[in-house]
Amino acid sequence: MELGATRADQPHLVSLVLQSKKALQHGEQLCSRANTLSNASAQCAVDVLALDAKVKWISEAVIEQLKVRHIASSIFFYSHSPTFTQLAATVAKSIECKRAQLDKQIRVRLHRIPATSTPPHLAFCPFLHTAGMGHHPFGAYLGSRYHP
Image (tube, rainbow, N blue to C red; front, side, top):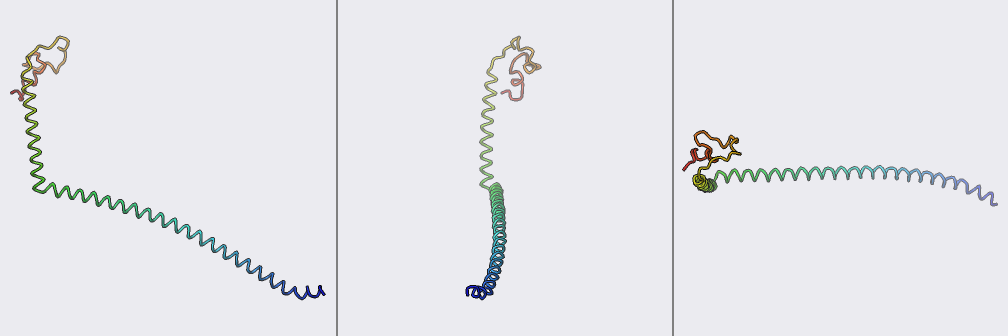
């Protein structure tokens, strides 16, 4: 009887084997499709990150350009304002006064230096020889237009 029962169960076993085989093929297809989608998703994530980095880089560059242009326009605006012009004139005048004061002090000190002859070991120096000034080491200055 066991033999007969086994033969009677055979069509059922064949059906189960075929169903199992189809289920296995379907599972493999699902896994393959899931793998393909996973790889595509990973590539999309990498592309999005690269695009995000480019957008940040461009945004930062634009912001820096706007800052530079704002500073330049501010400088242009303030350099043409009456307050800036007055301040610049005041600073220029004080610099010129200080320069004139120091120039006068230098001329006075050079004038006070007694006329001395050039030492023999320096007689070959061409910058110490000045026409009409003898061998005075500061002859060029004392004979120039800066003489007090």
